[in-house]
Image (tube, rainbow, N blue to C red; front, side, top):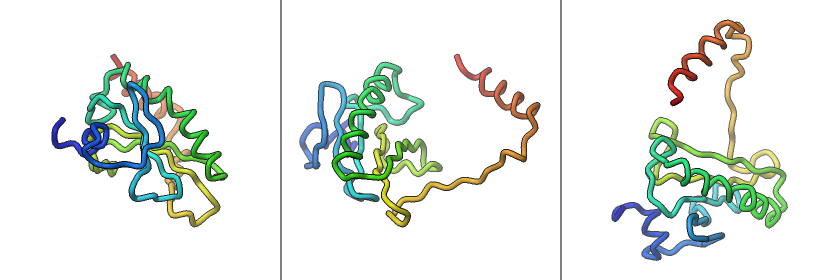
Length: 140
């Protein structure tokens, strides 16, 4: 795609701080550096988001995540790592080329937070079964 910033990075038209590259995947530091070492892992083949990603492309990307995450954690002696993928504007996707964030985590106050509401008491086992069936029916 000619106007995709990540495609331009892959093609060398825009500089990046490359972490890893092979035939299928490119990984580089996110310029925002939410936490020190924040890395993006992207497929070289343009795909907009997880919904439009061919299973083989997804496999190629996710197969590299463990070694990149391990390297990021080790390089900065991080306490943990979050693996994050945002899809659509409502989920805060800002670049429409599939990308996986590898976010090293340090003690509290490292600049990144993930917190959600625990609704485990809001659903009965029967309601959970209904929800799971609704999703299962959409899987082809």
